[in-house]
Image (cartoon, rainbow, N blue to C red):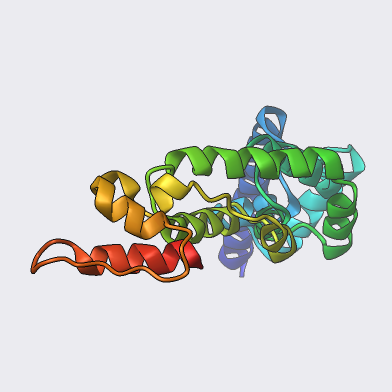
Length: 212
């Protein structure tokens, strides 16, 4: 019995020591970078701290103001906006950090609309330049894909009309003068006389795109 009691006492002491060491380590981490409750719980689990002690540590950290998910959320929003990210991507990051849904709603509502729209325009302009050499259809698809990747909502993307550059859109640079005339003519009817391999199909497809 005495041996059993001694073993139990040693196990308890070791557990308490592990808890204290983990608490000190987590405080050091928080002083370097604020952590969410989820971050702290996941870290303590890696240290094999049981649920009861995890709750005790969280409680003590909250009492001294070292755990504040709303503040962590504010930092995330600020960081994401500085990277020109959209609301959908911001919400995703907040959820990954385990931020409460009420806090997320509050933070999203507080985003300045003017700043948000400016960010959207900057991302749009950036990829308009990057994909400048693409045809309209390809450019449109790639820009929409990027805007969604950044986390912008369909309501913003749908209201933004991708600008057409006629010369690039219809590949006029690849056509000779007669072909360009056939593609861009304002006449209702056009007769084109051309031999095999002269680019009839290319002229026809560019003409259709031009008229559309």
